[in-house]
Length: 331
Image (tube, rainbow, N blue to C red; front, side, top):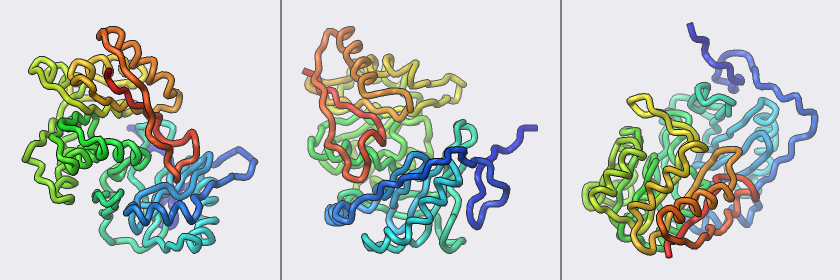
């Protein structure tokens, strides 16, 4: 019988003994965002962002709630110990604080647990990013529904106003929403029908009809891209933001280190002249240089060329943290 994965005891609602204690005796250093960064985010209509970052943990704001992601109890306690003195600087009084343990194995991932606040309230909450509204759900799984380290890239898409956007590994379709708000048609592809349904709800939350000019395809991205190419479909913006690992219904796996080059090659087959393609990964050992290398190889095979560019750094993320991303513009 398979044992349940071990994870630290949440306080005060999670039972069990702690098992992720750090052996690192060095003091934990936390980098909190400055009050003027907080004020700028509020002024632009954003209440989903990073609050603090450390080597073993980070703290994010999602509307009235906070999500503390941690590798060790020591890291978790360090954030909770400093939170009150920093919260008054912004100023902000969180309704609830959720904790998410970061295990080494993906199979040990669990949904966040409540650390502080009143139990029994709805675990859904709405957040805003530059005025765009997204629904989060802390009960639905390991990820609540929005990757905030893609904020600058979503802003780029909205500013560029693509006519047709292809959003692969679309999750809850945040890139599709901002493209639709800019007047574009979108195609969102993800293995999870449930995630796409949440994406359609995000469309509706922003006054968009998901049935007008938008498609949601629950299937394997590597199978969908050749079908789109055979139909002659072209897109002037393409989002490639794959997970580190996934498995489709037939058991076939996607591994980002193994399959990323193939993904880029397939995407180029549906790229319109002048298309802008976002390459993004969160794998711990992959670097931006790896993404550029994959793009150069795919472009060479396709007999094409491209220019690389990067979105502006996020003011709430210290350098070197968050997703590794690069844009390729076809020339």
